[in-house]
Length: 278
Image 1: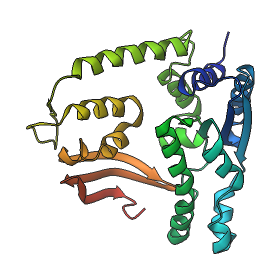
Image 2: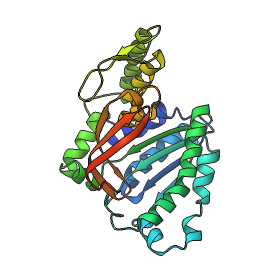
Image 3: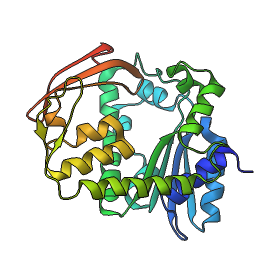
Image 4: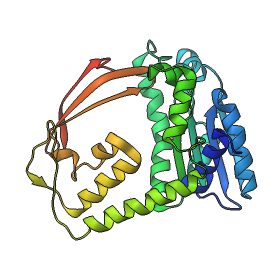
């Protein structure tokens, strides 16, 4: 019988990234996810592809932010640059051991470092949009994420694998999500040919809005990106929302009850109960 790690690895390789023989596959993660990375590596090899593992050590970013010169801080990691700009598949597994590690880091140096990493993310999205790169980004359950969810470690693991349908209750997660994809295509087909959709709910203007592309953006947002998908749809959806209430984080900072108010496609007011300046 497959373990949840094995099922999750197969889901990422066969469903999310469609790894094929000969693919150059980059796997990025941290030491906290080593058991899962091993399963992922094994599965990629079994598909005839070429896995390359890039592992972050504990406190890596904290050390860099605290001790690196500006020149070092602005240096783009060469192996990551190659993976993001040249490889066929990118599998990113976030496995943090301390989600507040950079709470007291110099915000200007954090911004400086994020600006460098944004170049890699830009390449990821650009190549992903053209089909040149197949990528998947996810988390792996750690005690740090369990604490953020106000759960016990085993409780959070069970919740995570159940939500991904890689637990014992789902014999074949790939088949399960393939069926979900077919069901969602049915919703897309129903929306095709319609010109308007009405959004109803708190802080949402009830007037009919949208072109048919908005329907598809809303559906895609529900599939993969959550509220970020709604925000990124820009002129299609976000500009017509009165407000969004969310929770989230930036590196090292947890932000509670973030509220964004939109007008003409732009955020005109933003507030948060905690860490507003993060």
